[in-house]
Amino acid sequence: MSARLDWPGTLKGLKRMAPLSLFVIAFGLAFGVAAIQRGLSGLETLLMSGTVFAGASQFAALELWGPQIPLVALIASTFAINARHLLMGAALYPWLRHLPSRQRYASLALMSDSNWAMAAADYRRGETNVGMLVGGGIALWLAWMLGTLLGVVFGSGISEPERFGLDVIMGCFLLSMLVGGKLDLGVLVPWVAAALAALAALAWLPENSHVIVGALAGGIAGLLMPPRSKPKEASP
Image (cartoon, rainbow, N blue to C red):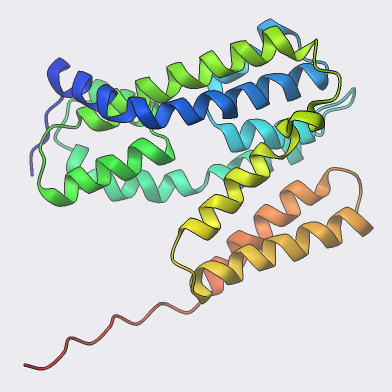
């Protein structure tokens, strides 16, 4: 299936993603506040959001931030958290492979969980325009930057972010991913493994090691899970 990318499709994707992007503003605000509390400058915080554009990884980086930054742990945890993009990109490859290289890689640079999910649905329906991936990514990036900016502006005046619940937004976001999805062993086992490993590392291993230990434990548990058998079709 040959794909194409044009401005009308991109604008359509931006409009479709705009309502969901409103929730990303709150997520970005929480990151901006947390980054300021961790000692990053406003410019550093905005540059991180603008160039990294990966909320979970950015929050994980803040957990490791300090006078002495464990670079290896930072790289490993970021890779472990974002490893899902390997599968997400592979799932869209048959759709995007006919695009010019410049458009294909630019599209993937804007890929996030939400616009990927909607783009994958378009692909399954037989759509040929990849504007949902690009336009949706632009909408999410703009909302993420706006939220981060608000967090930077107001972060220095919020001495106790936990009073407003800003310290648990990341946890609530991840919990919603678990509860909102289909609950079966294939989903629960990696999450439980990650949680138990992170708690054990928090209690017995050096500071900040729980981030990478939990991510790796969840990934390994998912890798070791037996493949799911496809349901048998009912006989006529």
